[in-house]
Image 1 (cartoon, rainbow, N blue to C red):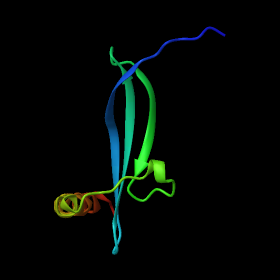
Image 2: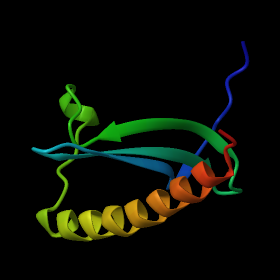
Image 3: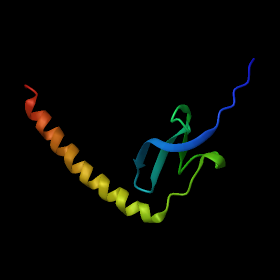
Image 4: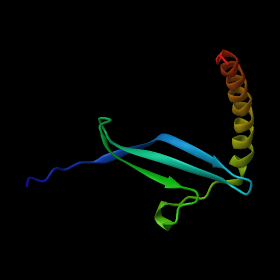
Length: 91
């Protein structure tokens, strides 16, 4: 097998997910590793509640309130969308 020299020089979040419960907020972030020429090498996911220490990160307390505010605004949009769609369903 021929060896390739691959230099990973960039990382960026490609997606994230927030799970809310009564007791805590859990955030998952998927990170894409890239070469200098922006070629994707791999992805991996870390979490604020991961069972493996190397895949766990601390979510700063200062992020809790903005996440809750976004969730509240998004909930209004989703509820309104659901109400609109229910009116379209024939009975």
